[in-house]
Amino acid sequence: MASVMRPTAKRKMALRRSFFAFAMWRQSYEQKNRGGDGRQLSRADTRRDPGTIIRLRPIAGPNDHVVRLPDGRLLGYAEYGDPQGRPVVNCHGGLTCRLDVQPADAAGRSAGVRILSPDRPGIGLSSRLRGRTIGAWPDDLIVLLDQLGIDRFAVMGWSFGGPFAAASAALLPERVTATAIVAGGVPLDWPCAANGFENRTDARFFRLSRRSPLLASVGLRIIGEVAARAPAMWMRMGASQMASPDVAAIERDGVREFTRSIGEGLRRPGGAVDDYLCYAKPWGFEYERIEGPVHLWQGDEDTFLPVAWSEEAARRIPRAKLSILPGYGHFLARDHWAEIFAALAES
Image (tube, rainbow, N blue to C red; front, side, top):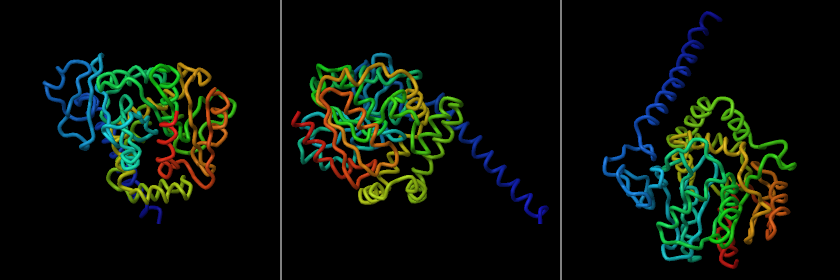
């Protein structure tokens, strides 16, 4: 029996090694031969002036745009909601991209909100910036908003995007009118976060990103490929780490919409690795410095981030209001867009 099984085991191991090697080669090739959005750029694109809004062909969707930053990098973003509405900047979650707020499009139109959702560096349509920090994010954001002629705006962030929304509020007090943080992360040096991430995927890739960024990139690339090419399979695997209300919300809004956001966010996984590395560095601001109103939402069935994190953030932020919603999980925003937009408008 052993002699019969051995060739099969060897073939499986060879396939795994081949897939792993191919993923590494593909990642290296795209980093060397592609533009900031992972697609081939024309010579005309590379000569655009800083701040110019660029249309790339092909682009991921009709709502997508790209602006060139002063250092030559590209910053991609998507627009949803009411084009003439009050501006709200969305800081997308981890392992996803600008597309994660697409389900809020109809709610944004109804509320008169113009949703601007930029990709962080190295994610989606945006060029990578190695060594970036959470506190540096507002610098990129200001270039985009200045180009769009927007002075005052609200900001919201979900999950990993929460710290980037908080950074914007703390470091741009003269421009941020109000902030919404939905199931947001907090600094790991806070006592409530001493045990790190509760979610297995985040905990695993947080460690791996620091120990072996290349291996983390390959693993994240595989997750992204599965999400993009086999949405049903990805959902079956991902559902095991989600609360039942989260699964129901995603299935209602559309599994393909959800997995497309993940596939696009991990198409070039170096940006997701940088997100994890950002988390381990000094953030460059303190929550106690946030001057404006901050609305925090948290579901009591969240299996990704504990309620204690939002409670501690609310204690540290001077003008914070915390809403803990019973019966909701990490994806509670999908059921509460109207309330979130209303709170940002009232402030």
